Length: 376
Image (cartoon, rainbow, N blue to C red):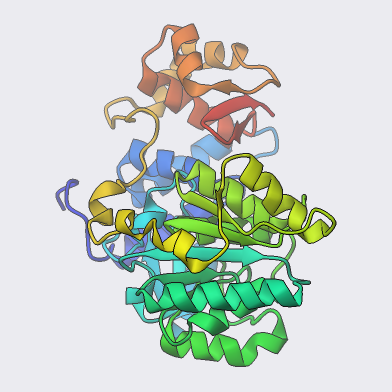
């Protein structure tokens, strides 16, 4: 297959290899992307990974083949579809994010996950009556303008947003497996979204949602949207995490203002102070619709590593030279941008990236938002 072409679907063996990579402990979305870039395919990366994992202080193991086979079988039994990063049906907005999930699973109509325009709406679970009212008003009016409403199926604002958009198009991003409905009270809503919209998850079927899964879910809400609207969010809330992801993804951030006496409004009010678009009605969002046009796929390009990792720079080449340890020596517990690291090292960018890839697999470094690196 020509590397410039986008395959409709990877062969089963390549899908399985990519799934083994991302299910291996310590391999996150950014490292996954670098490994597949470096080795050219999931299959070749899987072949190289055991040697790299052996360098960890506590040697790791590649995810078992049979477990990943069972995962894909469970997905198909649900009637769901698997979309791997790099395939044609993978949502183009989400693919543009550096932290895009290497695989997502969907139930429902695929047209809803890559629509002409999409607005994420998130907010408080313990929403006020006025918060619910404006959510339903804005979501229904925006949905009538052929904009897909993306949310997280949670109580409160999320539920109101989905319900108001059912007559149009809505996508629910969930923190657990596709077959685990949370909260259970939203079972009827979940079924309705499956019939009239789509449900998305990056977790294996059967996964019970845990606290650490929700920020990951939030980045998918942002990644599938052109902009994100925050309605009632406390100063430390998952909604603000979604807003942060939206800013990192280059998406528009909107917020409904509220009383300074209501803790549920403090997060949204702060976002407005920081530059978010103040929303009092759907008209404030509709003004942005011209930029969310049908040519958006040509405006959002798939994300790539900061520098191209070329296949002709094997990891073993860096391992044998002193440059690999030299890169590590330049790092501290204070995060530094990869660009600055390249400049300080005097090495080629692709060599630094390969060295960082090995150090990350070995558990020696941590990645931070904005392309920064530090010692772990």
